[in-house]
Length: 181
Length: 273
Image (cartoon, rainbow over all chains, first blue to last red; front, top):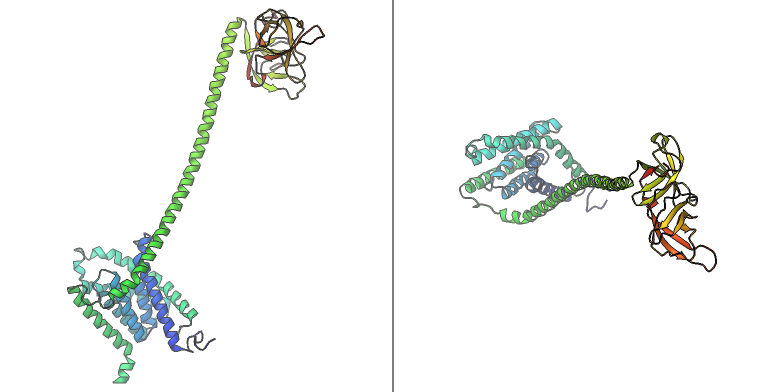
């Protein structure tokens, strides 16, 4: 193996391993964002709108205990703000808080199992929705908060169901790229 | 202090970014777009990708829809083809019925002109070899058919009954080499005999070399053979050969009846009676 590339575990060249991780997360973010903002509508799957980007932020909170992870969560939220109708900073705030919550949870709880990770994703969904509701003002949404309840709950459900699969997928890609710590 | 920061760097960074976001959000809620340092760049970066993904997926959906539409068209096409085949079959059946109707109408009219009791018989079998010219009809002794009875079609003489069974009979055709029907040339009243020859054609026999017979002269039954009533069409004179020697001329006859297209015939014993 070339010393420039590092070994499969990414230990030979930590900087190269970190760069790979950044590229991987950027690619995954882009793919999830494109799925959420374009593919779902183009394919006519309007009711199937899992918050994949949130799942990625939870993943970062659980696995990337670094400033880069926090920055990543912020940038992901910012990116979402750019492509949604929310005031810039709203999603960035929600994602940063979700990251913080997941980070703290992973430090105090055992979150490596599928069940606990899924639970954290669900709580992350609740937290994100709560932050958005607080910032945007829940009561102002079309007169009644329950107008949003159904689609939001559906999004939570899909994200929670898909989370273990997506976690496993990202883990596998990371192992393949040799970017696991 | 530095150790505390290092130990809690993620927490601090995350907290800082949360506060930054809160600041941005609170400002932008009041005045949208006031603090948005990266928005333009991100939009420029990701926007085209969104466009590509949307366009590609929409095209994919369109292709899928077109494919489904094609599958439906194919199914519809198959159904329509089946209906068309059934309709064609029906047309053929109706046309067949119409033709049969016309044929039977002619036979009926002809039967009335005969003024005798006649039987209508359908042809159920044809000669299997080239040696003879005969066919089988679906009327036999049980229906009153007897050997030697005359067989006609609306267009003229067909032949005569050569053999009978209980429910079927064998008809020897005019163009069989064993057949012989006494005829008159209608125009000149010259007598002769029309019979078949090898190969299935008909000829006019026993007419003098110098008799007045021309191509296309109509030949009718003379009624003297005791089988066929007088005046039935037999055919028309075809080519004529008058040799230098011999007593008789040689003439082919084009039968009035197309034997290959016959489906029903009339049988009568009028002459025998």
